[in-house]
Image 1 (cartoon, rainbow, N blue to C red):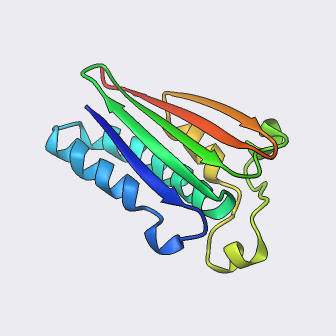
Image 2: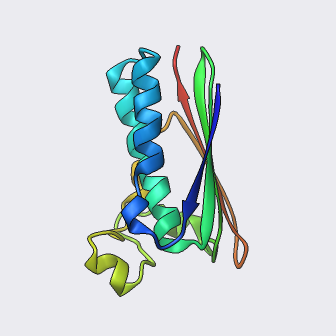
Length: 137
């Protein structure tokens, strides 16, 4: 099963829509609740990162019997130092984003904690691709 969700950068009113839709699908497929929770936390963090930092993006979800594979691609400023961005509390979010309660610097660390596999590729000035794998067996 494959799904695609488009994300509009800066539109916080829609942040979380994709992760909510995926959660509903996984419940219908009887995925264990603990697995759903981990994936949805990682996915939500990625979705909010696109809204907060990028101009636009897409989430691709591929579900098969053994695993759930999520790709989050965005067009945005990219991440100059992925190692630094993975540190808890490090954030490049704007003051406006922080005032809305986002940008605490926990997005990427939370994604890593909740994914079985996490891969991040980024090119400054072009965008970022995050791959999240959740194993089902």
